[in-house]
Image (cartoon, rainbow, N blue to C red; front, side):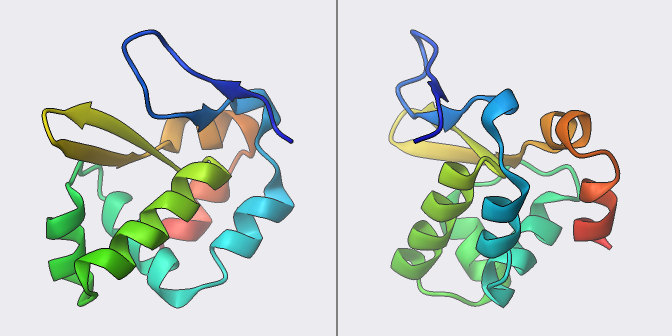
Length: 107
């Protein structure tokens, strides 16, 4: 099981950068909907689930499921803001761990 880094103010668990696994990331991104979400977030946007769901044409519950898988694989970061979760791509961390990967994924 990968080590999870949790900050005191951040109750949403994310894998530590050094534990990101390329095979897990690629398996997670094998789904076209998840790849579309990554490309959307690759534009540097931070978005909430409802907005992502609307942009990619998914029901909110399905989008939430895909976002959880992306977060657990270490591809995205979710930050609590009231009752919302602001989702962004972990572009810098992914680029540090796997140089060139973000560019390939967001093309």
